[in-house]
Amino acid sequence: MNATATNAAAAQQPASKAQEQITHLPRYFPTACPQCAAQTDAFFQCFEKHAVMMNEHDVVTAHNSLQHCQPELRAYMTCMEKYIANKDRPWWKFW
Image: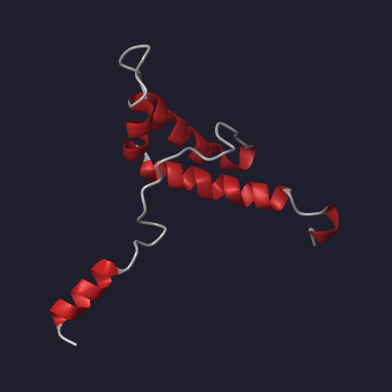
């Protein structure tokens, strides 16, 4: 297989989860927990900075702001999903 065929095959594969754009806020947004304070603060600050509505009918700015805050959103989601997964475990499975 030559380099061109290898590159073409790689381009046809779906993007990994880490490379996909997150286009919607998670269902638990804007929940925060003490264990995720740093990630939550970083994402909320970025989102607040970029999600300023241009007028009262603006429905695009908040959606576009997610593009600016992808690393912060990923960190927030990763931490919160770990927290929620641990929180939802039955009490007898904590050992």
